[in-house]
Length: 84
Image 1 (tube, rainbow, N blue to C red):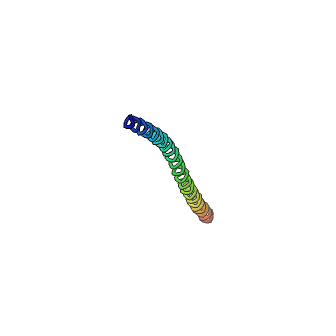
Image 2: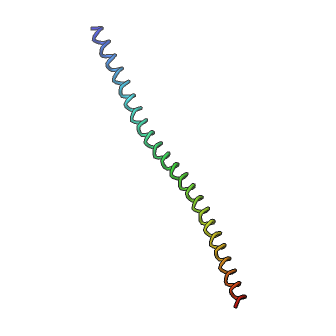
């Protein structure tokens, strides 16, 4: 009878251990999913910031080039006015 009690006790112990491990597994899966979402968001924010900086630099370069072109246009109109 004592052997049967030992097996019952061991079975109860193992069931408790299994339940605890399954609960931890579910919690870890949930945490990992949340962390992956956070990481994805952080990576997207970094990429968006980088792109915004690049776009701003390109806008500045475009404005500078347009200004230079405009100054050449003004110079050519002025030099044509003197030749007439």
